Length: 492
Image (cartoon, rainbow, N blue to C red; front, side, top):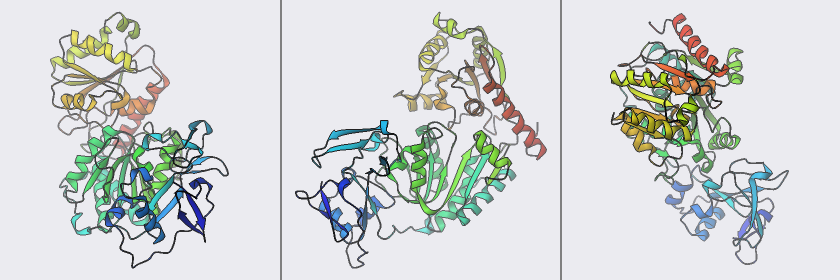
C-alpha cells in the first residue's frame, strides 16, 4: 500500500506512491453531506482505530470515504521525536522490530507490544470514522434491575451519577463484595438515556465473563456486548461495551464514560500501554470511573489528602464484616509437596470443610505446585480441579466448581478477583510467596462471605514465615471493618 500527499491531501497510489510513514502532514477533507456513505462501514469504524487488514471492505471504497471527509488516517508508528506506536503508546526501542515488508517494499519497523491485536508497522495507517455518529435509541435503555442499594451503595451511586453528568474523574474505593457492579447501574442508565456511549473495562477475561450477563440482565434492551480475546463480537457496534483492557487498543475517542474495574489488577496496573489504551478510548470530554478494593499507596495518599475525588464503601451490602484472615504456620510446605504429601495443617483444614459440605478455594503461588496439590487432594478422596491462566479448561472447571461438581478448586492468583461463589472458604498455601502482595491477599480474602445467604466464612493463610504483605493485608481488612463500624454500616 502506497500513498503520496498532493495539495495537503493523501492520495492512494499502489505503484508510484511512497510508504505511509514517508508521507508528511496532510488534512482530512471537509465532510461532504451529499455523499452516500456506507452504514456498515460507519458501524464498524465508529470509535475505532483499525488496520486495513481488519476491515472487510475494498481499499478503494475506504479511501473514497476519506476523500469525502468520513474517514481519517493516522500513522501507526511515528519516528519523531522518538519511535512511538500510536495504537498502544509503546516507546521502548526493545519492543520494536523490523521486517522486509511486501506491502511497501521497504524495511519496516513494527510494534511488538501490541502485536497480538494485529501488526502495526511504519507503512500501516490507523483508520477511524469521523462522519456522523451512530444514532442511539435512548428509549430502550431503561434499567430493569429491581434490587435495592444499601445506604453506602446509594451514596456511591449518587456520586457516580454526578461524575457522569459533570464529565469528571471519580475513584470508587469499595471493599470486596460491596456490590460495586450494582452501584454503577443508575449512572449507566443516566448516561445511556442521554445518548452517551459507555465502556466497562477490566484487566481479565474471567471478570468480563462474570460481568457481561449481569449487565445484560440489568439492561436487556441496550445491546450490550462483551469483548475479549476470541470473542465473536469484535466488529459489532454497541452503546454499552464490557471489555478487557487489551481490547481497548482498537478503540479511539469512542466512549463518553469509561469505567475501569479492578484498576489495581495485573496486568493493567503494571502495563503503561494498557493505561494508554484506556486514555485514548475516551472522548475529549469524558467521565472516568475507577473501581477498586485495593488502591495503590499513592492513590490512597491522594484520597486522604483530598487530592483525588473519591467515595469510599468500607462495608458489604449485607452489613456483615469482612472475614479476617487467620495465619497458620505449616512448615516447609514445598518440601512436603515434593514428597507427595500435603502439609498436615492444610489437610486437616480441608477435611473439616468437606465434612461441613463447604466449597473450598485453595490458592497456590505457582502452576507447578498447583498440579501436585490437585493430585494430593484427589488422593484424599475429594473432588478437585486446578485452574491457571494458560489452562484451556479454565471456564469449564470454574463452572463445575460453581455447580458443586467439584469440592475444591486449586488456583493461582488468576481467580483472586471477579469470581463469586456462595458458601466458600479460602486457603492460601505459601502465603509468604512474593506473588501474594497485600492487594492480592485482600482480594483473595474477599472471595469469602460475599453472599447475603452465607455472609461469613473462613480465610486461612498457610505460611512458612509471616511477611509484611500478609500483615498489611490483615490490617487493611481490620481497618475497613473498623471504619464500617464507626459509620454504622455493619453489625457483628
